Amino acid sequence: MELLAFVVFGLAALVSAIVVVAHRSPIHSTLSLVVTLVSTAALFLMLGSPFLAALQVLLYTGAILVLFLFVIMLLNVQRERTGAAARSPFQTWSALIAAFVLAGAVCRLLWDAHGEAVLAPLTEDFVALRNTASLLFRDYLLPFEMVGLLLLVAVVVASWVARRGGADSEEESR
Amino acid sequence: MSPETLAALAKMGLWLAFLINVAPIMLWVERRAPAFMQDRLGPNRVGPLGFFQGIADAAKFIFKEDIEPATADRGLYLLAPVLALVPCLTTYLVIPFGPDIEVAGRTMASVVIDSDSGIFVFLALASLGVYSLVLAGWASNNKWSLIGAIRASAQMISYELALTLAVVAALVPAGSLHLGRVVDYQIGERLFGFLPAWGVLVQPIGFLVFLVAMFAETNRLPFDLPEAESELVAGYHTEYGSIRFALFFMGEYMAMAVLSALAATLYFGGWSLPGVDLMQLPGVLPALVGFVILTVKVAIFMFLFVWVRWTFPRFRYDQLMRLGWKVLLPLALANLVYVAALAVGGKL
Amino acid sequence: MSVPISWYLLLAAALFAIGAIGALTRRNGIAIFLSIELMLNAANLTLAAYSRLLGDRAGQMVVFFVLAVAAAEAAVGLALFIGIFRLRRTIDVNRINLLRW
Image 1 (cartoon, rainbow over the protein chains, first blue to last red):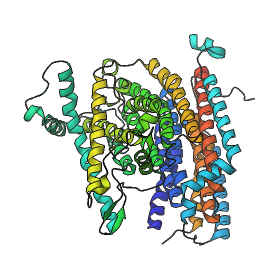
Image 2 (cartoon, rainbow over the protein chains, first blue to last red):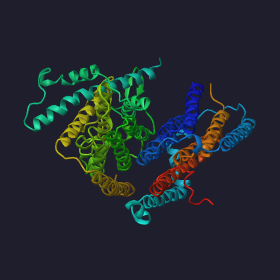
Image 3 (cartoon, one colour):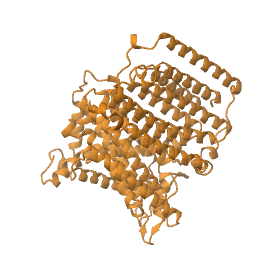
Image 4 (cartoon, each protein chain N blue to C red):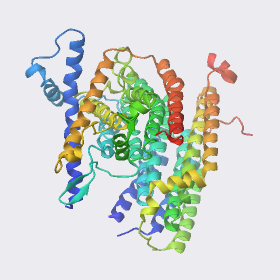
């Protein structure tokens, strides 16, 4: 049962991840990323963290990617052209080879380290939301507050950078 | 099949029977109620008082010709109406509709997913609703649709913040993300010794914020800018006809019903009525009667939706954004601080 | 049958490599951004898997903070793209060469 779920969601994540980087239309890329992230949320659930699964769907797909879609539609981003304007084949191939070497090395290391080791069964204690919450709001309270501050700064900066007028108002009036 | 699976299927069947009927009945209410308000008759030919108008309309939707725009992005165009049903057909899973009941010697909760993180799951799945609107608007390859989609994405993200903050404040008294515990709290406590501790009495401002955000999240008037017919033809579903349009239509009414059920659960005691002890009833009756009580509360909310629609004019887009960010969000935050202060001070 | 933990880790490594390829080969600024989100997501999966393996919820906390920082990053990054688009009418990174020698 768990194996079946892993295969389904793992394959969905892999295939949609490939579509994300291979598709030329940014809208389709973003939507494939939605599939990847939702599949990963299902994997989080299988790894005993309903908290992360819900957060992933709520925050990533429900807010961040909608923001991406919003900006893509607002700027009317077109498909990438191929041909002369494209990157040199050298760059593409070196990126592909580097990524494959990296992935191969990491996979080898991971396999050597863990092999076919099977996990201990999930405990009620590990899954319980109450325990996660007390960890977050007691032991990690300071980082939590700092992330809140970071988000506030990000909102202020974003609305300042994307504002109309100001430094680029000449451009606007053209 | 195990008894647990059977029970879950039975509970889902109850909800689905309810949700499927929401759209046809609302279609009738949405025509007869404004007709009454405007002193005219409304559709009254099909069945008694025109009650079967919904069925006639459903048949019309199914048999109409299916037209696809030639320049549409076909895959996404077909996917969007199906996605419209996903959030409303999954979120009801965590809404409780009765007390724990005893069936064949085992205790069973009257909610499909009896989980700690109930409301968290609800919010996560509900946040996926915006995709169907955005995809429909973009895939139709029509400028009115696209404008509707952009409006929808900005509007739903903005009002989700206020909605979520209001929900968080509503959970504080019960101290649990499990909606069943929230209802239990509202049954168990008394305000000033005689009033039921319904959320609406503890935090009226929170309820007001939730109510307004609920209208915006379901794209109902006065916030129906994504489909404003006087500016955008029909907004994101301009290019949809026949059964595909019907799916958007059903999705909208089901979303209204599920959000109304959440509002009733958080602020109006859910499946309970003050002075009525459902536990006295035998067998599965407590769950069924609880479901009926919840349905009545949902029906009152649904009528409110119609009533507001025919009473208020549509907002302008800048007014909508100003209301969301500069009024509702600060109000929701203030309400959260107020409820948290009550909780810390031991008044709840 | 339960799944060995290394499968989760291998899947995360594969996702990371795919994201890296995208970030290195795409020219559309937003597509590069999406690839980076993909890499972040792969890292999150690794953290969650190790948190499960070690039975320590600290890994989940790190994922929480990564998600929050990703939200901040997306807000600022997309605002920058809007600003750049206002200035240059494009978000093709080959043509945003203001700071290139």
